[in-house]
Each structure stands twice: as C-alpha cells, then as structure tokens.
Amino acid sequence: MAENGAKRIRLGMVGGGSGAFIGYVHRIAARIDGDYDLVAGALSSNPDTARESGRNLGFADDRIYTSYEEMAVKEAARPDGIQAVSIVTPNHVHFGPAKAFLEAGIHVICDKPLTSTLEDARALRDVKPKNGAKFLLTHNYTGYPLIRQARDLVASGALGTLRVVQAEYVQDWLTVAADPGNKQASWRTDPKRSGAGGAIGDIGTHAYNLLRFVTGLKTQAVSADLTAFVPGREVDDNVHILLRFEGGAKGMLWASQVAVGNENGLKLRVYGDKGGIEWRQENPNEMWFSEFGKPKQLLTRGGAISAPPAASMNVRIPGGHPEGYLEAFATLYSQFAQVIRGDGAAVEGLLPNLADGIEGIEFIMASVASSQNDGKWTKFSEV
Image (cartoon, rainbow, N blue to C red; front, side):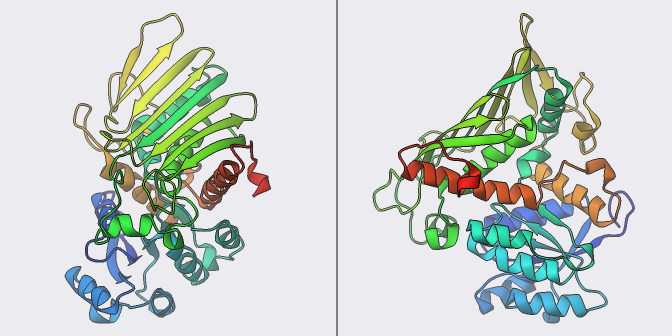
C-alpha cells in the first residue's frame, strides 16, 4: 500500500538501465511515497543490458523486455499489466514509446524534453489515448514547495503587474570536449539523439518551463544567440535569449554548460511593480520576497509564513529539514498517482502536461531559428 493507504500503481520503465542517471532518479521518486510498484521494463536498447538490468531490479523473467513495442502489447494484454510507464530514454526515443503506451491505454510519465523534433511533438498531440490514458512531463522543478508558493504569490497580485523575469540554468560539466565513454555527455552532444538543441534542450527548457509555471506569462517572441564554444561540438553549449511576453513584460534566459564554477545553478527572479521574488535551486528551501519600500522577507519551506495548499500539500518533513531534488520529482509522481486514481482535482493545473511539452519544443525551435537569423525576433507560430 502507498503511504496514504491507497493501492499501489503497477509501473513499468523504458530506458534507465545500468549506469543511467535519470532512470535511477525516477525509480527513487516513484518509491518515496509508496505510490508505485516497478514490475516491468525495457531498460536498454541493448538486449543483454536490458536483461541484466531487469534481473538486478528483481523483475520476473517474462516482464523483462528487449523492446518497448513488445512491452506495450504484452503488458496491455495482461490482467496484472502495468498501469503506467516511465520513459527515461534519450530524447529521440521519447515519441515512439509515448505513442505506443498511450494507444495501449497505459498512463505515460515522460522525462523532458517531450521529443527531439517539433514534428514528433505535434504528432503526439494527435494521438488518441485508449481508455483516457493520461500524460505527465517531468519538469521536476515545478514540484518544489517554494516554487508552488512563488506561483501563488504572482497569482495573488502580491508582485503587482509583472515587468521583468530572469531565469538561468548554468553548469560547467561540458566545458571541455566530452570523453567518448561518458554516456551522459555522448547522447546530449549528439544532435541525432538530443535534437536540434544542446544546452537549450537539456537545461534551457527547464528554465523556460519554470518561468512560465511561476508567472503564467504568455510568450510573444524570442531573440536568441546560441553558441557552441567547444571546438567540434555540434550542438549549443551556451544560450542567451531575450523574451517578450504578452502584456509588455520582458524576460532574459541564460543556459550554459560551459560556465566554469557552476554545478547546477538554476535561478529564477520575478519583478513586478509592487514586489519581487528570488529563488535558487541549489538552496531550494529558501526564497526572498520583497515588497517595494519594505525590508526583504526570507520565506522558508514549511516556515512561519503560511503557505498556500499547493505549496504545503507535499511538504513531507518539518521546516528546517531540507527537501530537494528527489523530493520534487517524487511530488510529481505522487500527484500523478492521484490523477491516475481519479482523485486529481486538487492538483489540476500543477502538473506539466503534453501542451507544456509541445511549447518547450516550440521554444527550442524558435530560439534555434532566431539564432540562425542573427537574433531576429521569432514567434513560436513561425516554426
């Protein structure tokens, strides 16, 4: 049983075999609140790795698959088949499994970005899910309690009319050419597997989704400068983007994987005519809130200042006990479990979905097109 007493959801996984970082993260997230039992998987495109990985996770032999196509068909036919599947493959292997499992009537949890091409993203929108199968895109940073509180502050009018939004996500792990043996770097720097974007797709989409989630602003156009600083690299490793929003607000987004001295520097700053907020992922349990003409306030996760329901519903431990990356992932898993069970009214609008994923790919492609045209302002409708 889950922590709340509900029956656990039978979960499968595509990708995420031995040595895969994000698959391991998803497995932990699925376990934290006890909502899922991982019982089946097609964990690698290499049959030997798929079998070894499945045995290591304790799957029954007949639930270790060497292709997602076989897995979707056989699991849908079993009386004890999986009810949901996690897709944790490189970007170019998101579309096929997502389509196959939705059409099989199995709920889909997909790592971001949605797909590697805009054509595939829009094609996924046209898929007819069997039996009302649902879709979750794991932009996990939206699961942090203080990000939920920031969203509520904006919606409540506490910041007034929004004027300036700044988001950045900077790292340094690709500062030099990647070792060919580095599995995580090799597919992220290969446009055939990552898609048209490098840093913009890997981490820039997170920054973009975060600013959209918190502010609710609709993007009007982007002006982008994408650069590959490392010689021979085929995808961008540094991105500067200006954004224009409907209503007149302006934005800036910086994503980099060559910013020496930065580990996982995701930051968000939002300013209106009444106040502002500042949040850093590397210290996610604190957020600064400022009202014009008044001293800054330090808001803390589970702290003294009352938080809205969306920010407090998944606070698992008392204030002062840090929660972070894995718990944010787990919040999405736990709340998607509510949706699967038909009890998701309380989390409606909080979980990243297919439309968010399509917009993320449109953001990538509009930025690429803008950069190729010397920063020309480009609308999503133009890609």
